[in-house]
Image (cartoon, rainbow, N blue to C red; front, top):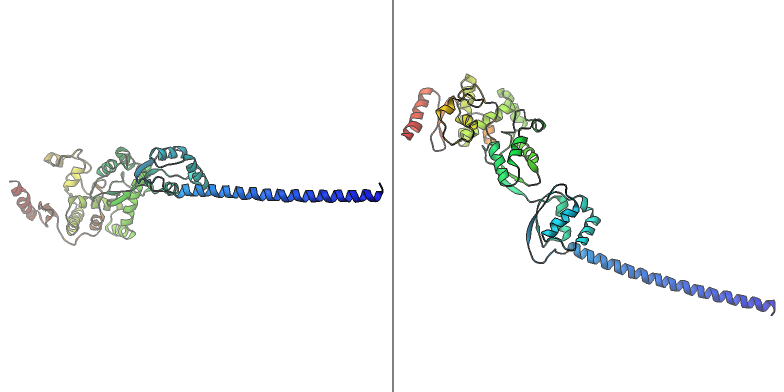
Length: 360
């Protein structure tokens, strides 16, 4: 066989080899494309299933459930709480959803009102944003620290003894700018929206912050004009609050106390005596008025050492802006109002009319 034929045969083999190689490449490309399309379809299907799980109602049977997520627990325990409450289907899917959204590390403690009609995504969003169950708590004007603590405990929002203890904590009081020995007087009475995740200290801070909104810089300037500290204003306002009466009478009660303080007279206010009586039974006795205690304004000169309740806005304003009258006495008319007098003789007549004859 000549060299010419050998070259022809060799060229033909190379050509065939190239053709086979090209066919194999084309086949591999087709296979890869098919596999890629199949994978994309599978991934899309899985994503669709996952999205459907994340956005669909947990249960089509409507139920409202309240769950409490304690502070400091793991995401696994949070998921267990939801599962036990019937608010979790497909636990692994929920874990994946939390991982993808980064929610697992940002769950906030608290009490939550959830519904079975919510989607897993909605539940997670609520837990992350801390949309906890809220309670409107009505604190009337004139409530003492003790009564506030009791009401909060009755509503499951605070431990009574811990609340009272923290309200006298010097560190906390200093951070709140309170000069007295207690937060008594600074827990502003109102309808407050609270939740169980707040805790005692946060609630105290919240209520004092509401007080600061009422006690404006202008009021503090007025207190300075009167020669009173903020604590003395609050103390006087608390006595005015406890003496009762409509707004107009609060201004007159305030005038009586201001006039007495200027003249060096004792305030002789029954509510201050009552404040220092443990388990007061509603009957103020002569022996109570004779007890020498820091709050008995029948025995001490000037104001007591601190507020006797938590006054409202009207009482605070009355303490700062008393009526321009010369009254020195007042007595209850037993109908929610008072009779005011400028001298002892008129006062004694009023006492005879509204108190002694009434009892007789």
